[in-house]
Length: 249
Image: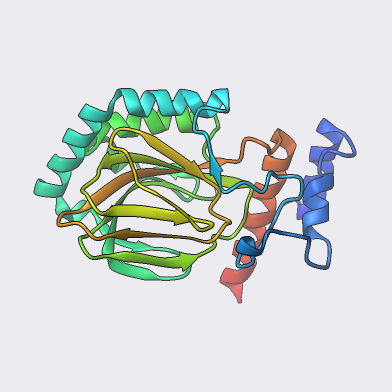
C-alpha cells in the first residue's frame, strides 16, 4: 500500500508540482491565520474565502443540486413524513464528532464514502438526487455524509465549529415549523421550506427548534467550490489516514 507521501507525489505528478501547495501549507507546523469565529476548527485550508454564508446558486455545479432538490420538495417531504410515521426505526440518534443527541434524529443517505442503499426504498426521491447529482457529479465530500436531520421540539444544537473549511454544508429545508433558526458566525437565519441554505461550518454555528413539531432538513456535505481536484484527492488521503491512526491509538 502506498504511503501518504507517495500518494501526494502521484497527485503532483499528474497535476503539477504546485498543485498541493495550499494543502502543504495547511499541514505545516504552526497555526495559520483564521477568522476568530473559526477558532474551534482543526484545519483551515488557506486561500478559501472567509465567508460564513454562501449563495446556494453562486457555483453552477452546486446550483444543479439545489435545483434538483428544490424542484422535488413535495415528493421528498411526502416520503420523509411517511418514513417518520411508519418506519421510525430507520432513524437514529445523530452522532456528531463532539456529541450524541437523542433529540436530534437522522436518516443517512450517504456515509463513510458510500451510499446507504437501504435508504433508497424509504426516501427514493432524495436518495436518487443525492446518488445522481451529489455523488454522480462528485460534489459530495466523501469524508462526510448526507442525511435527513430532524430536530425535535425544544431541541438545541450547541454552538460549535466543525473540523475544517474545505467542505461546506447544504441545508435543504424539508419540513420547517415556526420558531426554528440557525446562527452562523453571529448571523441568524430561518429556513424557508423547499429552499436551500449554504454555509461554511468551520465558523461557529448553532441551531434551535423552539416550535411544536419536528424540524427536518436534508443535509449534504459538499466540497467547498474553491477547492481544486488535486486538493480534494490529497485531502481525502490525508484525513482518511489520520482517522486510521486515531482508530489504532
